[in-house]
Image 1 (cartoon, one colour):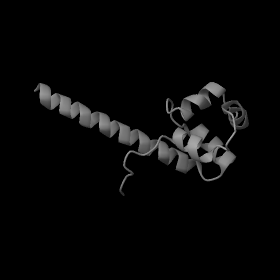
Image 2: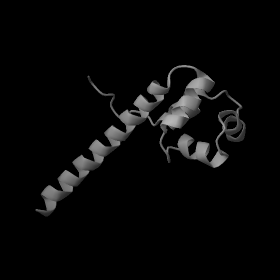
Image 3: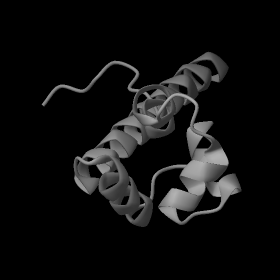
Length: 95
């Protein structure tokens, strides 16, 4: 299976594609049953989507919890690969 080049963080997808224009972080957090801070961290790509949050997002916006977790896994794997490549390059330079 091929992976997307530089997949977006699920928070970006939520912010740019799913949230209704004019919705506030506070109102969405209340709807999801999470704190405003927790949702803000996700929307700003500072925190990942947990299984519990994936279920809440799926219930609020449709789709499946698995799709939210899949987005998070793709994002995490891409970021880990970039860090590994960077470490390998730095290791070769210093060796």
